[in-house]
Image (cartoon, rainbow, N blue to C red; front, side, top):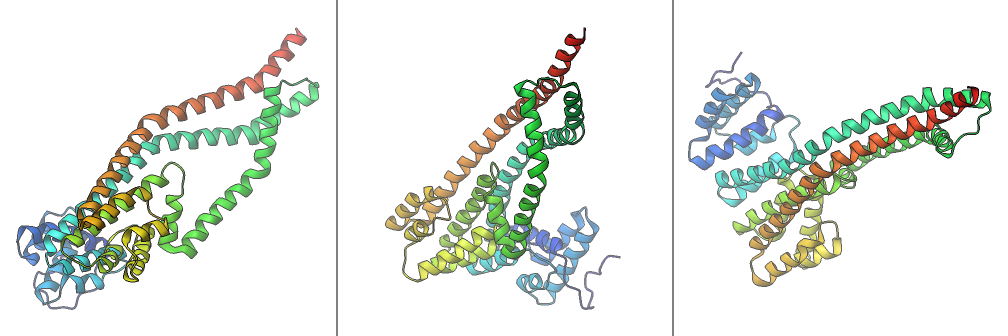
Length: 351
């Protein structure tokens, strides 16, 4: 049952998905100059989700009772930390509507590169998974059967077949321990490293790691540039940026940068000493600090990283699928040749 628009009953804490949708809606509403409660109700009327529509109406009621958007967000259940940080950063600038709209657009733009990379790798990854399943089936069931048969006939095996048997032995001996170690590293990183450790682990993953890290860096650079545009002091801007971006590892680096800058170290030297963010942005940051144009320098650095993301995701989409298919074809062909060439020799010897 939908919540009445002017209900006086105390409301329950809002769901994270509702609040995140409300923040995105609030960005456009505030930027257009429409009163926030009226805009939230209009958004509720257009929403396809009944739960989100009810939540938006509840939020409108809370704001009409005198609560701020920040207060409503703090009561949300399981809300990603960056959403509350985004609102705090927007309120600090004095132009909540434009800041929310710009920040949200930055976030969506950064996410788009990551989704492009995932889309480029999904089909090859499924192909590799299928190939690995076939490989597992052969190594566990088919190869041992052929091996016993060849041993019973006392055949002299070619080098390719011997290599296949040796690889089967290696796989059976080490595959399970390797999988256990990899899972233990992933689970341990998530449990003990938290969101920051998990983000670091994804960033260290081959192929997708660099794309993941660069998407976080572009979001950070554009968000920091936006706060500097509103004359927020650099240490505070770094901390607000850390609170308002979704990549926890990059957010942690922002807080470390803020501590160094507060201690009197320039942003340029802080980046050089930490070496956790791409060093290619250092020349632009140095130029910005020297010329008093750090906001423009950070925006240019973000554009540079975005251009790299476009190139990298384009290469991944065009190069990786053919390479995967070639690898799978070679694996299947070599396996069949290795298993059936001794059989052909045996048949020829018996004829």
